[in-house]
Structure formats: C-alpha cells, structure tokens
Image (cartoon, rainbow, N blue to C red; front, side, top):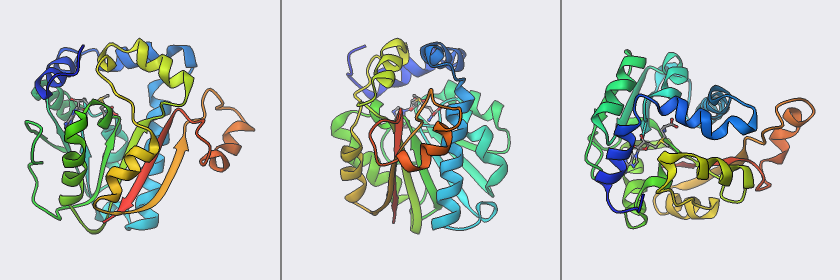
Length: 235
Ligand SMILES: C[S@@+](CC[C@H](N)C(=O)[O-])C[C@H]1O[C@@H](n2cnc3c(N)ncnc32)[C@H](O)[C@@H]1O
C-alpha cells in the first residue's frame, strides 16, 4: 500500500480489525513467541518507567495513542486509575472497548488529540509512529506532550529497523505495507523537541527468552540488537 493519506492508514486497520491479533501472530510465528510475550515486555517497561519517574500507577491516568484493538490495554487497565485510548478507526476503537470495558476510548481524524492540555500523567504510543506520515511526525509528538501534564511521561515504542528479524516480521505483515521504520535517534530527535529524554533502550532480544539470555537482557539495552526499542521523555 503506498503511503498516501491518513484515511488510507485508517481504512487498512479498519479492514483488519477482526483479524488484527491473528495477522500479527502470523507475521511473528517464525520467532517462536506469542504476541502476548511481546506485549507483556512492553507493559512491564511502562509500569517500571511510570513507578520510577511519575508515581504509583493506581493514582495515574494513562493514554494509549494508536491503541489499535486494545491488546496492550488489557494488561495495563488493572494497574492504572484510568486508561484512555485513541485511534483513527471507529471499528478498531469499538473492538478495544469490547476488550476493555473499564477503559475510555476516542476516535479522531488524526489532527489535534481530543483531550485537554496537561490532562494525562503518562502518554505512550506502541508501533504507531511508523504509520504516521513523515511530515506529520513532529505534530504527532507535540500532541503527545501537549496532553501530558508537566512532570509526566511520554514513551514511544518502535520497531528496530536494524534488527533483521524485525525486518522479516514487518515484511510478512500486510498491515505494515506502508510502514517506514524509524531509527531510535529519529524518535529521540522528535521527543527532544518538547521534552527531556530520560531513558532509551533496545528491548526484546528474542528469540532468547530462556536463561541466560533473559538474565542478560537488562544489560543489552544499549546495543541495537533488540527487536524493538523505547524512548522515554519527561515533560
Ligand atoms: C501496528 S498498530 C499498533 C496498535 C497498538 N498500539 C498495539 O501495539 O497493539 C498501529 C495503530 O496505530 C493507528 N494509527 C496510525 N496512525 C495514527 C495516528 N496518526 N494517530 C493515531 N493512531 C494512528 C492505527 O490505526 C493502528 O491501530
């Protein structure tokens, strides 16, 4: 799919709303780990970052930008006072609400996020930026900061284009036909425009789930070997 417009991205995810989990599962099946393994690692990172830099999750509001069908939110909702989710596609947002009835979801057209400024404690996006048109990335990042309160956290998780297994998984996934993967320093550059980078780390050194690799993972974060990475910034 040529990257042409927001509505093309929206239509593509709408088309896959009922098969989203299976599509992703199919594209990563060769790695030998289920989708929930990858999701849980990111959820653990988010909880850990939140506790260290913002406070106790049960007191906090968190926003999932580009929430998709709410797969990550299923793991996060029980920990936070309130989880909000935002996406382009109405069908996708409906699915997310079915999966997470306690969370609040909104649909928007891709411009200004439909939340007041400073209204969230933590704002994150998982594998969304590689679907955002390059000329819209700076605005997208600025919106993440606008809705986050001072002292709050903005976290972006992205695919690592330097990992060959990630490249294979992306090439096998129809929903990623339009994807333009971003290097970690590109995401750092975007977040630096509005906040202070506090942590950046490569994650998911799969297929090495077993010890000793799992034990080593925290020490490998500097090396661009992980399947994904995160960049965290404080406002
Ligand atoms: C690969 S999916 C990731 C979904 C979810 N974050 C997850 O990790 O399961 C990308 C999602 O980003 C959404 N998306 C793409 N561009 C967006 C934008 N500009 N604003 C908000 N969401 C967007 C798509 O509709 C899709 O649901």
